[in-house]
Length: 284
Length: 269
Image 1 (cartoon, rainbow over the protein chains, first blue to last red):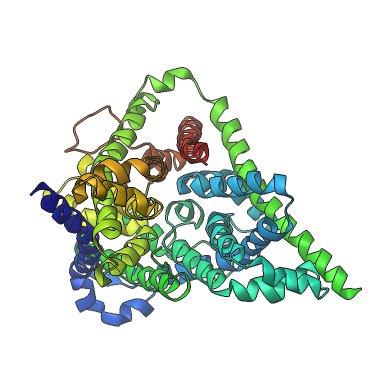
Image 2: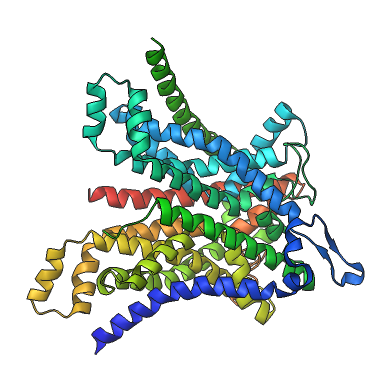
């Protein structure tokens, strides 16, 4: 009797996670109904975000935060990918035995630091450096993108490292026996073998970067304007939500839900494509 | 010659990447320590935010994270147990497993928005409960995946020995399999606790923040991380100093729990 109860409870809780996921989709979609009815798909290309007179209605478009999200993520990906790959190569092929452990623990601790700490540090230490190097106010796409890069490097390098490690030694040894250099072994044996894992880790990091909130909130400048230069301040979907969601009402609130819905759908598609196509977890 | 040069170049570049990664870690930790310790007085642990201290914030943050753990761990563990022990590799199990993995990387701000919609909006005020629920939603997928993975490492022979002794399935799971996976699962719980205690985005409009000490989970609830965000944006030196100290304390807590978790698993090889 109690055995059956236990089993049913475990099934119930297992399906609960599906209900939460479905719940998020349904709830966000429902709450964004007003905005969807009002603006439809034009929401994606409208670069205005204005509350109407007497706080009634208004025109809301997601173009600016969407562009800000995409550009800051793009900068992060361009900077992070080679460095993460480099770290993975260092840890699997280059580092002497005694360095592997301390370096990989350090990189993992980098991933454990809460994002708000990156924001604080970036605001007071990193932004001034960017300002003196590239001008501008120090807060903007570039600063946000670079700090975002630091945040996703650990994820990317640890997944890449794990998949590089699965390359059978015998493949590498045969290449070495043919007189290949270490770089040639990495390029022609390890990389092709772990290609899926590497691409998967890049896509997964992309999904993470899109939704990152706190670090970007400190650094992107949080102003509703399209950036013209890479150092310009702008905003992103998570940042707009973090700063303005609590005060929004009616149609503006619904537009915020619309943005959250878009962000969730996009990250869901990106993350699950990384999981299903590249990082498929076989049940052991 | 060219090949050898290229080889050297790439090896040097990969070493530089590792140095960059480590460099940022130490840069962040060092500036955080300098800034945090210079304004760290013991009495900030005795005063609340309203008097420029962090006592109520620490209590609030820990309370919400603990409640999230109390909600999330049983749910996540039971789900993991079903996936590994009962599902027989069914299609449903693989769907749940994959979607729960996807949830692990879902934007935390969206979870905040979701909990706002289902709890805060209907009752029309912020609450510590809402914050706890948001954190537990973040925690469940991590616990599911750890439990699932750790149970998969338990040798089949242990389960068979249990069956041979005439144990019923749930008794075998509870008394043999879980015991064998105890350390791995504990580590998973610690790591996920370290993750949620540092979260800000899911709390912004669920628990919001409170400058006073309170244990009333039905009202706005004090949060260390939300306070850091607010304080850092104030112009005055005193608030910023407190933000740094609070950040330092938070980082010490998070890294300590993390290292504790790693230490546990290392102990057992």
